Every structure is written in structure tokens, then in C-alpha cells.
Length: 245
Ligand SMILES: [Zn+2]
Image (cartoon, rainbow, N blue to C red; front, side, top):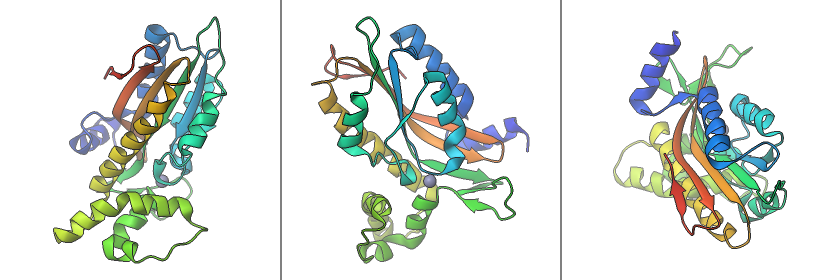
């Protein structure tokens, strides 16, 4: 598979997707040049899925920004919530009165030979599911999820199930099968909404800039692509989110 052909295929479903490492390299430069984020005055935190397939971009950002706080978990939802983000807001280094928080979040989805939700992994013969957490919910459907008993040993998965219920219910009412592309895009909206809601409180006590990059990571045999959803820089002096993409 040629990378140009692969990108063309991905862009039919995610028109703005680009190679992950290029996207994050560009945003890192933009944050430093335009907003004054440096490794010395910035704390990087990510809310991605536990799945190791998403590691290359997070490790790139960790090496670029020096350290990494994790507030995510299954399916790339911000499971760390208010407590997690409150904690990292107290870990931000300050240089000459400037301190910055850089947050990255969002779900992920595999793509392989025309099929979404699947990806080959090195050393494995079978094609695997990605994202496993979200795909399990999509496959189960509304009736199974609504009737699923509570399990305190599976709390993160139950959070995603509850978030996905309205989408599954709509599919059920429309008599159509839920699908992993729609489901992933639906979850992206929930992540954006909830992260924005948590961050609204931050401006009351965090005396610095907060850059928020969210999007869907697309896992392929040639590496990860990234389809950005939001790129905002939240500043204390301004009472609003400033959208720059
Ligand atoms: Zn996942």
C-alpha cells in the first residue's frame, strides 16, 4: 500500500486527516512561535485511549515537551475528569511569569484495506480491532447495552457505554445498525463537549494559557493519521475559547 493512496482513501471519510507525526510537529512549532509555549514553561497532558497503537504521536509529544500527564483511558475519553485536569494544572512549570498547559485528546479508529475499525499489528497474524472498547459497544447495540448489568470492575467501559447510548438508541429507532465511523465521530463530539465543560472552570484559577488539540487518530499499517476536531488556545485574559483552526 502506497501512503498517498492510503491518505486519499482516508480523506474520503476524514477529509482533513494528515500524517500524525507531521500534524503534531507543525502544531508544536505553531505553539512555540505564535503562543510562546516552550518545553520549559509547558506541561503536556494527553487523554488518549490506553491502546498502545496510539503511542508514536504521544511519545513524540512527550519527547518534544519533556513530560506527560495522562487523563484518558478506554476509547480516548477524558476519564480523569475534573480531578485529573485539576491535578495537572498544579504541575505546570513557570518561566518569567509564563506557564502553559497543552492538552491532547480524542478517540481512535483503525483502517485496513477498505475496512474501518480494523488494523494489522506487528507480530500478529490476525487483523485486530481498533478501537476495541468502542467497537464492542457498537457491535453489542442498544438492547444489549441498556440491559447490561453494572460491573464495578469495568467502570471505564461503562462510562463509554453510557456516553454512546443516545447514538445507539437513535440507530435502534431508525432500524439501522450502528457503525464504527459514525460512532467514533459521535464520541469525538462527546469528548469535545465534556473537555470544554471542564475547562470552563479552569480560567477561574489557572493563570496561564491552555492549548487544546482534539481529534480522531486513524491507525493504519503505515502508521497513524490525525483528523483534527478542535485546536483552541484558552487564555485567562480572554473569557472565551479562541479557535485558530
Ligand atoms: Zn481504543
